[in-house]
Image 1 (cartoon, protein in one colour):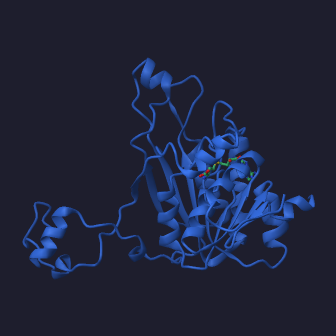
Image 2 (cartoon, rainbow, N blue to C red):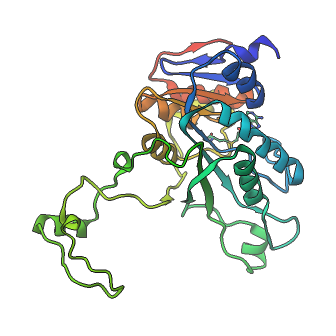
Image 3 (cartoon, rainbow, N blue to C red):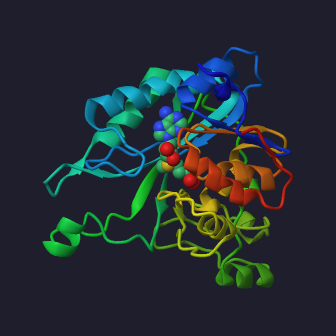
Length: 306
Ligand SMILES: C[S@@+](CC[C@H](N)C(=O)[O-])C[C@H]1O[C@@H](n2cnc3c(N)ncnc32)[C@H](O)[C@@H]1O
């Protein structure tokens, strides 16, 4: 491995971005040098695709073996109470209006090979997603829009560090009204559930979120995009909305914990970690995406290694 893999491409007060394959950087650096363990691996790996996306995705058995093979590596870098959160989109069979089971198989195999616990499944629903697959949705009109990705929360133990009090959502108008009255409409619901319990009328500072996260990636002119445009750098085609990273980082880590994104792309994870006072390590194999990600950190002091 070249030394460039071991020295960060840039650093910030809280983080380090590495250029290289995550396999090499984690095995050659994070594991071999008694490095501090990671509290959260939060990542969105390349999806299996039938056509080549801009960053050359794999498909089929090759993809399955590759992704699941990383399970042990990630697990080894993790604290005993740490979590691995992986976002994976759907894939479709070539030339057929049928969904591929490959993403699910890859996730199952990843869990199995790492002997991991499956804490919970989340759905990231993007209402603004463009219709796809175009052939079946727009042209033949025999399928509907594919508009969610799957997020699997895995861990070494069934009780990893987690606190849903850190991700409470603002109460609905109706709930606020009920709380201001100081009394819930008690009695039996049609579901036969009896809602007499006083705890329903206690203000807990917000409502507990569900495992369906709704977010759109529609920001057209944020600092990152302006930086890429001004510097003629390709904008990353599969950026994750900041809200998703924010949710899991707040839910599963505390301040000063360490967050790792092995497939960092435009470094949404590192940027959100920095803002939330978490330490971070990000790894990305395509240099132009790293160069673009520098635009996210205009307000913090950076050191560029290269
Ligand atoms: C789905 S994108 C991640 C996007 C990211 N979450 C963001 O918000 O910008 C996956 C990224 O993994 C990178 N990648 C692919 N194989 C890799 C590897 N072996 N090690 C590190 N990065 C890799 C790709 O270049 C791509 O940028």
